[in-house]
Length: 230
Image (cartoon, rainbow, N blue to C red; front, side, top):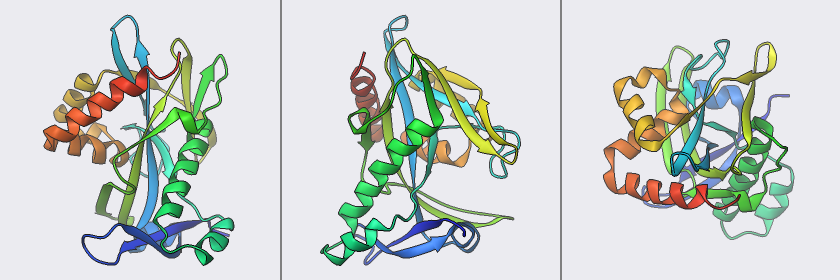
């Protein structure tokens, strides 16, 4: 059975996102049903640079979407059976969506980020940036129509850990190429050639470039999070 994504929408243009049901992966990506995901921005403090660094990876060349491009980590928020009981006793679904996003961020961090020595990410190591579903995309291609609301998280990586990033493609799980960027360098690289970046990373970087106040807030949070754990 195809996994189910959370189907979301707004009751009015100014209201927060709410849960309206579930949709299959194919339905979400091909037919434009509004669904949810998390985007993870792994960061650590670099003593040599005396500044935070961001870990970004190159997607597999065998990925169906955005192959061989720079991206952040992350994944879709999928339906869990315990949500049904929660919704029976809830006035609105936003707290559930926020909790589901937090849980997904923890799951994806531990699936995709591997540290040596071994480190297990927990809730105190992720930090939401902006509101649930703040980073939206609406893209059309020959594969379909994707409308996605992404919740961004900084992930605090301990200093002096060797970090590898893993993902799956048509051949199974593989280790990906990881590059460390400072924020200014990363934004300059994106300005020079947006086509080098996958849509997930692109939807965040575009907003940071277009909105100076958001970039300043992002940079402050980046510095703070990168120094959270040794």
